[in-house]
Image 1 (cartoon, helix red, strand yellow):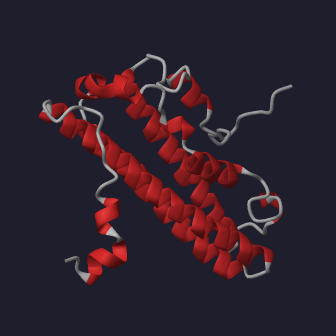
Image 2 (image 1 turned 90 degrees about the horizontal axis):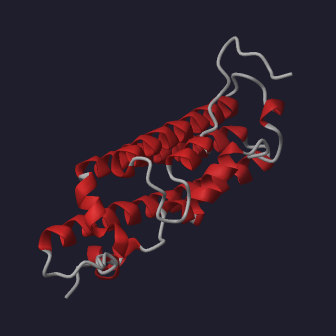
Length: 199
């Protein structure tokens, strides 16, 4: 019989969701693929919460509750920072081990994550909180929180790029992308100090 804790968290359902395609007769590869799935599924759960809090931040900002919006944005930032460190888990999966089960992904790819796409698109958008970010007063808590969040996203993207470089090098991505080149183009790095505008 399940404990109240297990029932509340629906653990019996949650722990059935890791289903490697590797046959159980290959225990080392099965364990590596299970690890890979677990890391990605837990990242999607964290991204889901980040979107919940991003929605709260937007609602508070649009209602003129800027201090509450800043609090919600700081929680989104904390979640993105955890997601960045979370990527380090995959440093414990050797490239050769990943290569052994990579064909089982077929054309599945992290670039197909609708949650990460929505999260990063909304954070990068100039009107994240219902108005252009340059319309927010400088050094106010909301502006500071938004800048910190964008910095956290860039750090996640950079770590992800380095991880992909280690795991697959210059091979194409499983989702049909060009791999490293496409990931690198997605990183919205701030302009360097002293850089001039083109033209």
